[in-house]
Amino acid sequence: MPSLHEGHRRRLKERFLKDGLDGFEDHNVLELLLFYAIPQRDTNELAHQLLKRFGSLSGVFNANYQELCQENGVGANVATLLKMVPELARRYLDDQVSAQTVLTTMEQIGDFLRPKFVGRQEEMVYLLCLSNKGGVVGGGFLSKGVVNATVLSAREVVELALRNNASAVVLAHNHPHGLALPSSADIAVTKELQNALEMVKIEFMDHLIFSDDAFISLRHSTPIWHL
Image (cartoon, rainbow, N blue to C red; front, side):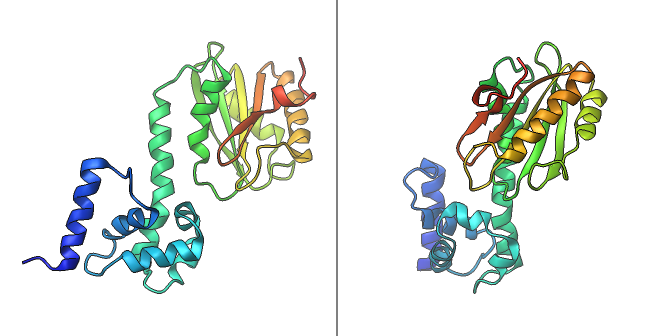
């Protein structure tokens, strides 16, 4: 005869399989996930503990590995599983939109790039390389850290664009936990890249800045763009 604890696990799993996570409280979501790292013990108390410590479900997933391991009841398996969640979400979303290889509007470009920054806890810079018809011909991350001339060189951007035979490029970076507003460093780098890409006849379409829930276009929000 299954124990009360085993029966609770079964019911929670069946509820998820029937209705998904709709209607689940955050502690139920975390509790269900923890089943797969803690096979024998009740995970409800630990779920509440983690949410109290880190403030929210996303706060738990965004906590660093060392912080998680310091929590009572969290070992390497639990911390690793929790850190996989934003990485899996980003990979899933990126895979979903990567099938759309022709991008003709800035909204499509934003949708294509957004998954690359999901769950990122530090600033990342990405260059998207496009053909003259908007086809994705390549791209990649260029740097980590604040966007300025010390971490992002015009030469690096131009070399990646030329290596992918790009006719046009879009630069994108994120402001984790901040607003999608350009800093003075963002504007300075944009001006530098405009000049460098103009010299090699590659169109610099835009520089997008992503926050947790939005993005802005420097082309349409600042007066610096060469028209």
